[in-house]
Image 1: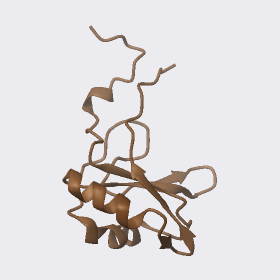
Image 2 (image 1 turned 180 degrees about the vertical axis):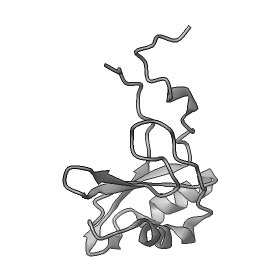
Image 3 (image 1 turned 180 degrees about the horizontal axis):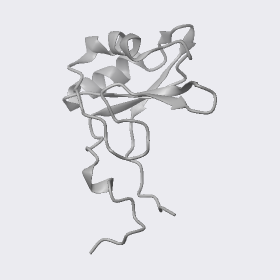
Length: 116
């Protein structure tokens, strides 16, 4: 029996095993630009947005700051296999995107969170 104060959508979230975190993105980068940079490393999977209140978990979400109305400077890319993830990490970590050296690492699953 699930406790009502736990994040009820947690079980519906997709596995993050083929997702990479991309940090230090310039604010001018959009999802299409990010896709263009990572497309050479493997097939990018297309996931539907989740129904929770966080930003949508699509293939290439770039996190947005709703108060400032601009990107927060990081995003995620979902691949279809582990080889593509490893190739993207080795190929893109430290590379220049829009004048900034990006950090690319395997994404970690967010822990459960309490709901008030």
